[in-house]
Amino acid sequence: MYGAGLTMMYIGIESGSDLVLKKVTKGATSQTIIRACRKAIDIGYTISCMVILGLGGKTYTKEHIRGTAEVLSAVSPQYSAALTLIMEPGVKDEFMTKFGEPFIPISDSEALSELEDLVSKIEAKDEIIFRANHGSNAYTIKGTFPQDKQSMLEKISWMKEHPETARPEGLRGF
Image 1 (cartoon, rainbow, N blue to C red):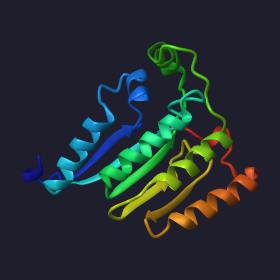
Image 2 (image 1 turned 90 degrees about the vertical axis):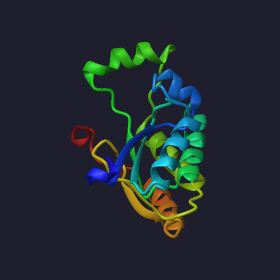
Image 3 (image 1 turned 30 degrees about the vertical axis):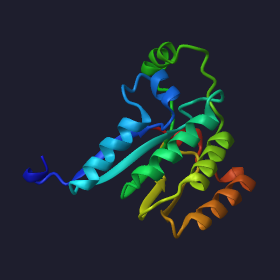
């Protein structure tokens, strides 16, 4: 593929928590994701990794974000994006069945706290262009690790004090 001109890969990491990955039947572990991403980078691919805020629900929020930050830090992709879990009507029942226990979705303010926790825990070895500006997100930030980490955290802190800046629910989606 690389020889045919494909030089960038978009990789849905979703979570770095092995427990959450198992519950959503991802079919991968944090270590296999890290190895695959590092291998792609080592042979010259540019990679963009997506993660999903709220994927662990209220029950596994801390584990989900801690593991996700660890994977992003270990991989140090050129690009990373955080989206927020939205349960579309046709997928909600299947997701709930796969999860295997009652799933309690997080609120907008909890998603913002997850984003803050994620940003604070990422320790980039190389530059990571980071975006949390997808249409699924109630709040948006952007920056480049490591140099913009503090300014992203300051913006998140400001947004926590100004919940009225959230994107209206009717304007969110995939």
